Length: 227
Image (cartoon, rainbow, N blue to C red; front, side, top):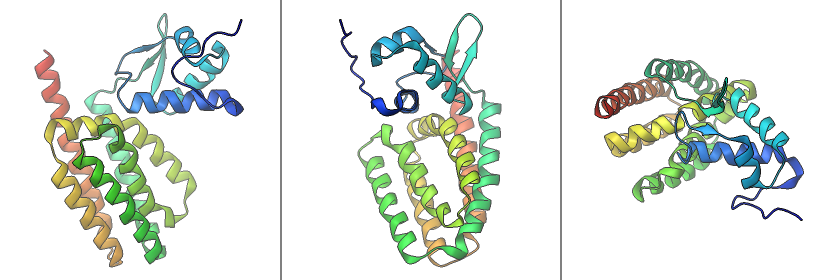
C-alpha cells in the first residue's frame, strides 16, 4: 500500500534536489529554527520518499552552511554566533562590492529597469509585512545589479553567503524596524547605478556594513532578553 503523501509535495524528476529546495525554503522562512534537529525519518515520511534522498538533500544543505551534522543528533539547523555572522557579512562586502564594480560598466537601461521592478516587489513586501518574502526579494534585487558582471562563480558564493545570513537579516528588520532606511538605501544604490557613478561601490559597502552592525546589536539584545 502506498503511504499517504505529506503536506509538502515535490517534483519527482530530481528528488534530492527537490527535497533540498523545499527544506532550504522552510529554513529561510524560519519554520525550522536555529539548533533544531531535522529528523531524516520524519522528513522522509512527510515528503513520501525514502531516507536516501533526504540524506542527500541534507548533505546539500550542509555544503551551503544551512545545516550541520552532529554526533548522536544527525542534522541540525545551523546556529551561528554573532562572530560567525559578522564574518559572513565581511565576506559579503568583499564579494558583492567587487561584483558591483565589475557589473557597473556593463549595465544597460533594461538591466536597471529589471532591478527597479524587483525593488518595487521588495518594497511592497516590506509594506505588507511579508517576512517570508524579504530574503528572496532582497537577494533578487542585489543579484540583478551584479548579474552584468557575468561572474557565475562569485555569484554562486555570494548566494551561499546570503542564504546563510538571510534569516538573520530578517531578524534585524523585525527587531529594529529599519524598513525606511533599507528602502532609502536600495533606492539610492539604484540611482547611483543608473548614473554609472562609481560611488555606488563604497555606498554598497556601507549599506552591508551598516546592516551587519544593526544585526549584531539586535542579536546581542535578543541574547540579553533570553538570559
